[in-house]
Amino acid sequence: MGLALRRLAARAALLGLPLALGLACRRQAPKPPPPPPPSLSLVAVGDILMHQDVIKSAGLDAQGFPGLWADLVPLFQQADLAFANLESPVAPTCGQPGVPFQFNAPETLPAALKASGLTVLATANNHAYDQGAKGVLETLTRLRAQGLVPIGSGEDRAQAERTRILERQGLHVAFLGCTDLFNINLNRKDSEPWVRPLDLEPVLQAVREARGRADLVVVSVHWGNEYQHRPSPRQREAAQALVAAGCDLILGHHPHVLQPVEFVEGNGRRGLVAFSLGNFISNQDRMYPGDRTPVAEGDNRDGVALRVRFERGPGGLEVKEAVVDPLWTENNWGQAGPRRIHVVRVAAAEERLRTELGQLKDAVEGAKAEPDGLKRGRLIQVKQAYQRTLAKRRERVAEVVGVDFVARPGPVPPDVRAVRR
Image (spheres, rainbow, N blue to C red):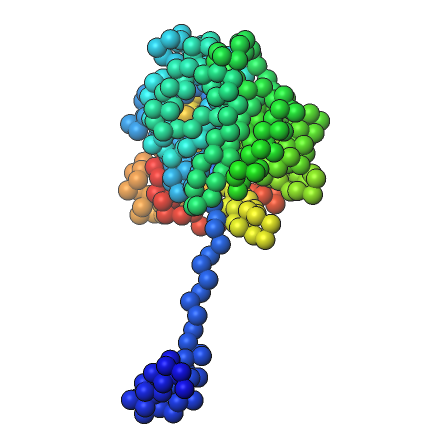
């Protein structure tokens, strides 16, 4: 009898158990459950447009810029990575004040983006050179000072075209950024400030190299035709080539309206493509009055928060969940009171309205909220009209993006439900 078996027999005798029963107990000891497979969550939104009224609204909000998208802050902060397209330089020192079609964001914006939970920002877009080459440099300095990761522009060409690899949950995520459009193209020398263009072959080679260094490859592309909901042939061809080269996720922006979210296949691979995430925040379509006019007149105020969860599978990281939360930009242009532009998650806004309407319609609670019956009746009508507007926007997002990707209406998490309007 071996030493281990003699010890087991001694323990069995001490407990008054037969040796066979002791062995059976030992064999039946439950094994600890295997650890869950590595997973990673990413949230992406579209264009951050620094129109003057957006800046003014932030100045009037007690929370500043984060108050303009308070509904989204919990979503950004809970994700492993949160992405947006920064469609503006941040160059208050070397640049000029922003004017229509030539932006410049306040120095407070980078800290606000960081505090909101954003981590990766596309800086390769058609407004990258709005404040010249020096504006590119100042923007990069200010973003990096806050610990934000800009992709697609750099102090020189090498920096602009450098693949940024971030580690989250023990996984390595590669980010590349590029633009297919320039308002002003100041790319001159490789040693000077540079914004990476979508020159397809060099970008494909960069994706192939990133594929060998990372668990996940994400490409940000500024492309497409403004105000068009359908991807152009150029977008579709580039998307398929990028996926075939090794890209897992393409985050598209520029059209200022939504375009479809689709799975694209190439070279035996499958990648998720958001052809356009739409505007995140802007002053576009400010005159849209709501449910009284054709729905298309509000398309610039639609956006989405794309939520993707990747999980380790037999072939590497796989998309286990991909949903979009419809977003809507509230805008009080032309109304009395302080200028107000706020982005809301449609589901959260609808739940708040249901609660508010329920209180107003209650005989006791309604009288407490607004003692004047006529005013209360008008307030109910206003909120019901907004409720219809939100329902139409939700349907519009599903129509454009694809109904299979839109999050089903359901209970809103408490951290979102409680956010003030």
